Image 1 (cartoon, rainbow, N blue to C red):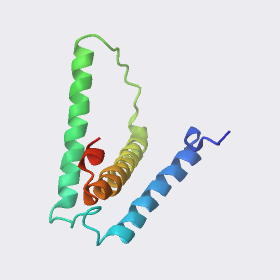
Image 2: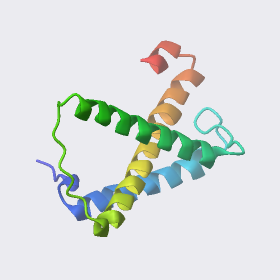
Image 3: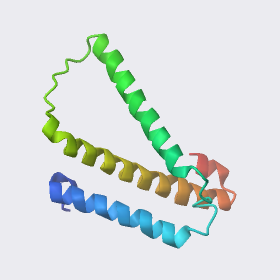
Image 4: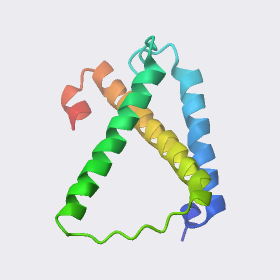
Length: 123
């Protein structure tokens, strides 16, 4: 029986810090390995923020449609004082999603593509 580190705030923070360290360590170790980390382009951060914004707008659009069709009832309980929690959530989401993409699409998929295992990389 293992310990679920995501069941408490401190556990979630430890997990997030671990993912941030994982991103940094993978960058240091694989920075010259083009199949894992392609060379950074000029506007990488701008593209990442644009994609993050597009994903957020898509999320809001889908929820708006669901709400308009009467499938969900939304009660706003957000208070302005909680804006820091919202920003922390968005930062954590960005770090977690970046780590997942780097691990799955960079390391695992890149390794299979380098070895010519295109079918394994695709699935």
